[in-house]
Every structure is written in C-alpha cells, then in structure tokens.
Amino acid sequence: MEQKLHILLCEDEESLGMLLREYLQAKGYDAELYLDGESGYKAFMRSKFDMCLLDVMMPKMDGFTLAREMRMQNPDIPIIFLTAKNLKEDILEGFKLGADDYLTKPFSMDELVYRMEAILRRVKGKNQRNVIRYQLGKFVFDIQRQILSDGETQTKLTTKESELLTLLCAHANEVLERELALKTIWIDDNYFNARSMDVYITKLRKHLRNDSSIEINNVHGKGYRLIAPNIVGMEE
Image (cartoon, rainbow, N blue to C red; front, side, top):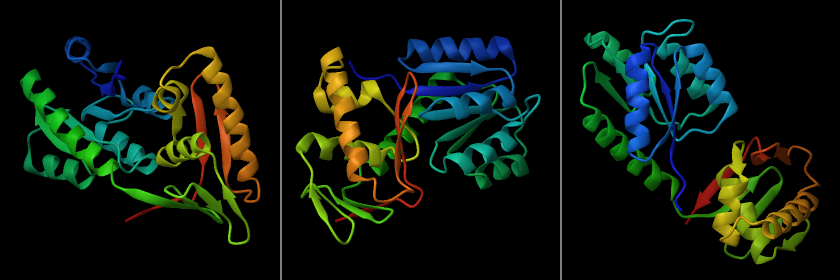
C-alpha cells in the first residue's frame, strides 16, 4: 500500500481546522492539525512532513514567522499560506518567504487539494533527479558502480548496502522511516527483514567510520538519520 503523504495543518480557527483535516483525510492524506504556530513548529521538528498548510494570523507564532523557522530547517518543504489577509503586501511577503502558494479565505477545499497536488507533482519531479553519485564528507559514493571511496581506499558495496545508502543519502539529515526503507528495498516490512536491515546499517557504519562528521543514528520508534553536513548529490 502506498504511504500516505503527511500534511502539517496550522489553523487557529478550530472549527475550520477540523473541517480541513477531515476533508484532507477523506482525500487520502495523513493530516495533523495544530491551533497555534508554536505547537505547529514543535510538531514540524518532531516529525517529517511532505507539505505545510499555514494560517497567517495565529497565536504564539504567526504563519510568516513559522514559515521562516521551517525554511531554516528544511529549505525545500512545500508551504501554502491560508489566510483572510488579501492585501498585496501580505501576499508578496508570503512569496518572499518562499511560499509555494497563497489562498485567501474563503476558499474552495477542492481548489486547495488541486493546488496541493500540483505542487507535490513539481516537488516529486525535482526530487527524482538522476543522481549518480554523492559526495559525503571525505567519501564519494558511486551509486551505479556501488563503490564507496575516500581517496585512499575503495569499498565495493553489496546491492543491499548500496540501495540502503542511496536511500539514506536521499533523506540525508532527515529521518528515513524504517517502513519506507523496508518496503522500498525488501518489499516487506516483516520482523526478519527488519533484523536484516539492522545488520546492513551496522555494516554501513563500519564503512563510513573513517570520517567522524558522518554518522548513522537510530531514531527511536521511527528509523534512521544519516548525519552528513556537507552532502552533495551529483547528476549525470
């Protein structure tokens, strides 16, 4: 089963927020509702989201400030502002902050979903660029040749090691969920495959141990995070 897209919805008008959340869930999204910017930001830092829908006028932290903070953590997260403010300067401010779209209230929920789908298609296309190697710290990972090198030694990775490292690199500095990795590489997320993945994670840690800036951390109850401060994906 395809994993549902995770949507962060921040709307201080509770009745509207609940209505939007229910509508998005009915459309097949996994939507979380928060009634102020501060709690929304805490949720953003705690979980991985595919898109954020932000009201502008919220208590504790307004939508523009929230978007600024989110962009510092993830410059590519898609953001749509939902607001009753329709002044030109407010709309321009939203786009200056990197908003992907801006809907003024009242709006059609169908239109919101159409706009979300259009943005997500663009993001998916951008993320599916043909990366053939990654530079991570002192290492170069050649995906096609399945070789990890540090300038002095080369390690030929197994197919599973290479597939897992490719996924970790694609989600670098974010949480790679166990379920996603298992279903992508092992097809099934059963107990035995999960134990097998743990073994391959241990092997990758050993391969990467010569660079102290590179780590693969366990994220309890969720998955793994590849810490690679200066990772660069290189395309054909």
